Image (cartoon, rainbow, N blue to C red):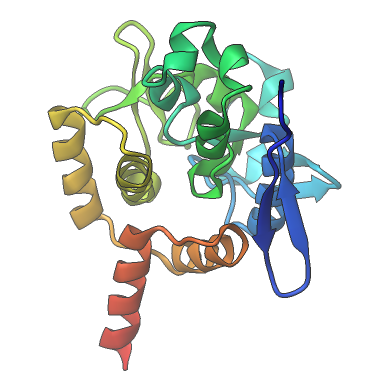
Amino acid sequence: MCSLVIYFFYTTDKVYNIENFNQAKSVALKINRDAPGTFYCGCPITWYGKKGTPDLSTCGYQVRKSKLLAKRIEWEHVMPAWEFGHQRQCWKKGGRKNCAKDFAYRKIENDLHNLQPVIGEVNKDRGNYQYSQWYSGKSQYGRCQMKIDFKNKQIDPPTRVRGVIARTYFYMRDHYKLRLSRAQTKLFELWNHTYPVTEWECKRNKRIAAIQGNPNPYIQLACNSKIKNLN
């Protein structure tokens, strides 16, 4: 017998009932509507209801392959669903579709800290590739400094998001007891130290904590330290 599981996330004026990923994306939109552009490329976003359109000309984005996907905003899991999903038994027995029936998996999938607005083409190209860093080669997306090694299934993200990526991964690892390789841990420790929190990162974290009930401690600690140093 199946039971319906509902998450109640409280804000000062509304209760959000997040039952599935589609609802999680709707709440993510409310949090990120005034985000300083798309996650990787920083392209300004115009929202029409729940649909977002990136201004590609403003940020110098060049379409790599799909004009259709490049014209829309999608919600990306910074830590891909495959990465946290395949560590669960439900994934081994039927992949993401089967895990949709698993309470613990849905909680991870719907976590607002791990959702970011990205250009659809970049979201598709990234897939479940792991983050890495190399010092050669050009971006495939014009001025957007996003580099993808399709052969080796790796992604070298722009410097503007490396710190956010690191702090997101550490949060996901700790909060859900997920495994993270030694190489990835070392890289993210470097990024966390090299690329400090931004004002938007602190604001977004505070909004998510008010809705979801928990902040990302790696962001919160850095934001608190930043405020203390300014006083």
